[in-house]
Length: 300
View 1: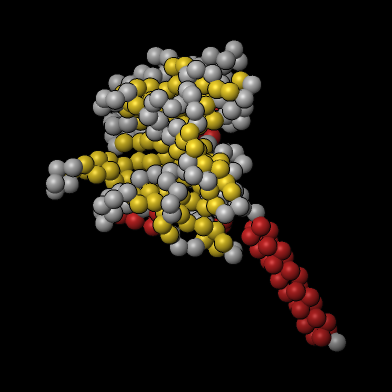
View 2 (view 1 turned 180 degrees about the vertical axis):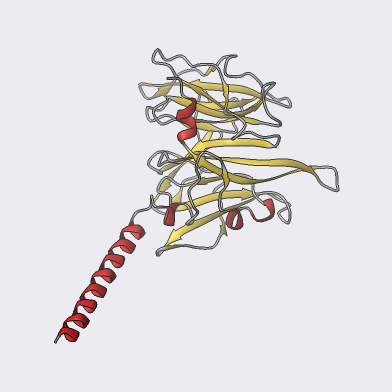
């Protein structure tokens, strides 16, 4: 009898463990914020940046820039180096409980709205429709008469964007507030923010409390570096802060942004290499780091 009771106990315990594992698996499959779904199963980084899924998205450094969709179930990125003579755009999607293979996409550097129903590119946008995405539409004034490489919005609709000045540098960062459904004339962020050259790719916090961008400046560590500024209670912005030698190196760092779940800062790190025909080719990888690095720089 004791032996039979022991066997029954083992069977009950096994069924219990199997039920727990099934429950946990379903929970992970349904939770797009877990690392199993959102980040290709990669081990999350600490306060030192680590390459993000290099074997998947940047083999041999074949990478330009990338971005998750708001639901964290699609990762968009581009390549223009190595065997990709022309810039090519890719997407990897999480479907049926796992990440699929990369495939080409017609979406180019999509910058999604908070809900994911609008994507922005420069001074144009597209809306989600029942059959896909609309054609590009103009954002209208004050965005139409300039070339914009990067644009970002707060939850209240204030936009921050860079401006091509027609020379060999980016002219600086601007902003425009959304007032009564219309954008006011653009205003410069000022010399305490626009301190260098190649000032580009702004990314503002949803609550508007900080702004991240990249530029080449005298206090940098090499090529372009990633900078941050914090917004004070009176609405003014503190002077630009280089994010330090853990984020920035002698290479080129650019396109810093915090994930929609607020957990990680992503950015690109690479270098310009001269090809046989004399043209330059950017070869890099995506990096990620715990977003606590931002709080460590925030004024107390």
